[in-house]
Image (cartoon, rainbow over all chains, first blue to last red; front, side, top):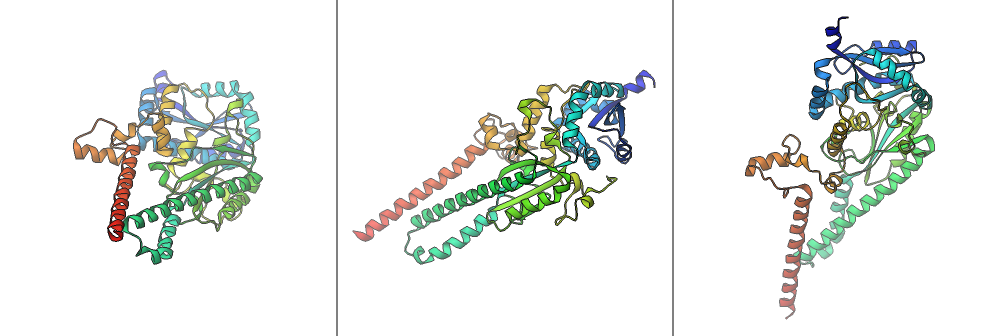
Length: 287
Length: 139
């Protein structure tokens, strides 16, 4: 390959894994962030899933600009995640942070060698585990139901109340209702965390989701059918793969029959939230 | 995208349509869930293309605002999205309505507290009026 030809492509790295025949077969079916064929770069007992990507899109300036644009970022994030998700069934995969790009495959090999002492124990720890996301929301449809029910009990007094007092009473009721909904949800979240902790070997708390992106729901849910409500807990659990379905059922069961909450279980994910460098501060908290 | 071995099969029949490893129809996995993982988690190793660490952090903060608590961001004094028409329908409306208001008077918290204050004042007026009516009936 000539120097100029080499410069036209960079190497995008998706994940670190073991160089097994299964891994080679898995990458062969995957296309990456630039719709490129994904392959393995191997060195000794480690491998990285990588793909050649056009330099003009992945050079510093272009990459940064792309990351700042939500549609392009979404395409990149989904492409990256698609490769990681395709490798996750292999059982041991360390997802890399988005946009880890190298000049050539030799550089990837060198990094694998340099970080071997970190990657191997992490791979070992995560082997045979999956990550589940558990999100607990207050359910606004339930609080509305409470609002609708409350005036029925109050109709006797409604006529006697002046408009101002009726307004204040309704307001108090609404506020009390919202508070109750929140407290019920918090109790349910605690119960779910307890239930989840019984099966999980690790837990990482994510920030509760709010805002425009947070509205799209996915995965299994229990509770009100409609999305919405306030996300009060957003946790990731590391669960042995052979108990993954049990985990999911138990978490959903713990939320069943509890008014005022909606629980969403997402996954199984590759263990993103647990693929952290072994710094003490970054360690996932034990359950 | 296909997997060589569908994991759902190994894990037993799911009661609800699970998407193995977050795969599935485009859009089935929430972008918020993906972003909080690919941007905030995962192994960090230095690449050759250095998106300067500060940039990534800023980006993460910006994106976090789309998935995280708006109130927290406000506490941090970050409200750029309020002024970005591509991200905030309010900024869009405001830009159309009054040709751009450069202050932060239109931010979420202020608007909410205005609404609340409005409701509180209305309630107070209603209560005062009611009391006056009571008195006029009594007297």
